[in-house]
Length: 222
Image 1 (cartoon, one colour):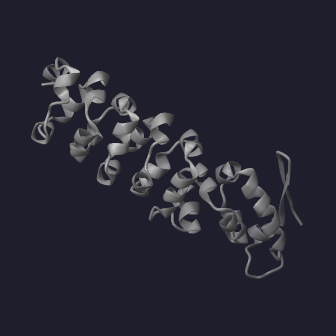
Image 2 (cartoon, helix red, strand yellow):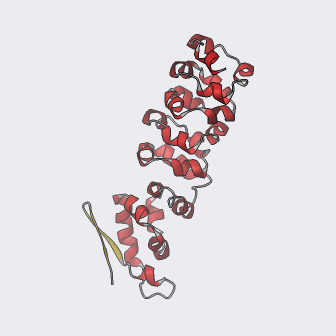
Image 3 (cartoon, helix red, strand yellow):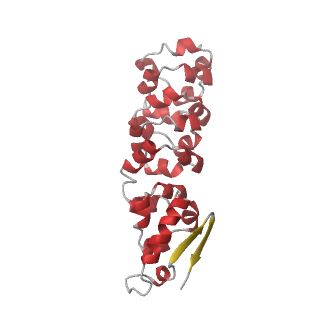
């Protein structure tokens, strides 16, 4: 019962074995206090069933200590709901291991907030691009329709390799999310497009360049 969980002391929860943890119901999981959550050893976190991970409230997710976050196994990461992903705090995002990031599902990647993406370090960004759902620039373009800030994970060479059709297909939110470095890369590559080429759509041919001057971004038409 939830009331029985709440009366446990932190040192008592840390004594629970796998067989005992596996008997906890979702209601009991949700009844755990911050003190009880943080009393779990990393090895106990590893022993939690996926349905127990999914049952954690947003407050309980935020209560997890960095070492507990690092203890989550890939299949447990997969069990996190989008709202649980969005609840992750900066100190938790910063300790995510590459194998954990590679385990993220599309709905979880799409749930990442702008601030969370901006916190990712280079090894984490690399791991995100090694994720089977974000390996190609086409996958990034598709998934960034759901989360525009994912477009920032495009490498400069990939940005320069965007076709006129792909550029023209960018939504306003995707375009607004591009970094200055990506826009500079586009300013060079877009000038190489031939607007009279029959292979380009009429919409794509109207764009010849993206001009970046400091923080001012404009486009030229011909």
